[in-house]
Image 1 (cartoon, rainbow, N blue to C red):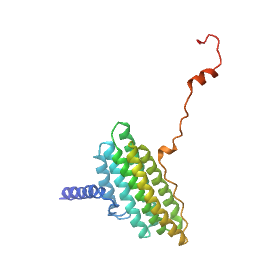
Image 2 (image 1 turned 90 degrees about the vertical axis):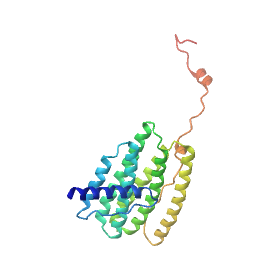
Image 3 (image 1 turned 45 degrees about the vertical axis):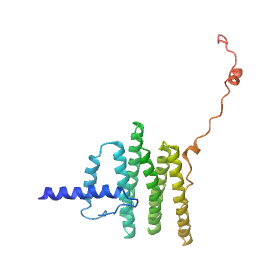
Image 4 (image 1 turned 60 degrees about the horizontal axis):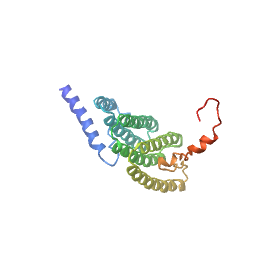
Length: 234
């Protein structure tokens, strides 16, 4: 009976995770940190991760788990659970970093992970909006942790965009991100108007624009300026 119960519980956790991962919104937070049975949630997530084998699949799972942690942060902040919210933010950042790492490993093995990188780029753009909402709710002493998470999310977004192989797809994502950032800027200004200080978002640029151009090299000019060395063939 106990084995049946545990198997059913695990199946529910894994199935709901797979369903919510397909949606455009954050998954339901479910059981929150601080609940006496929260360890069952982390246990089931660990088992699901253990049975996820390819780098691409692991990246997708870590992206989903990062969104799960962010949903928990959002709910905890609404309840005023500042300390738990900060600890959960750290796990959000860890999951997001792992998602990017596994995506890069998959790409290094020659796998086409553009679709995955696009999802990471667009998801982190959404995350920043959620973190902005959380920033407005938390007390002053917790804002630094939110700022750190926002910076991590933006860094992950840029890394994901840089790694997209298709130039056309990357440009589409960048335009989408810019639209979201403009919406966020408007919301940030509303928050500032209410007397709440908040850091500026950095400009989102096409990663290719940051690569310096290599000047044309005139081989004949180089040869003319090389001094003659005894024994060097002319």
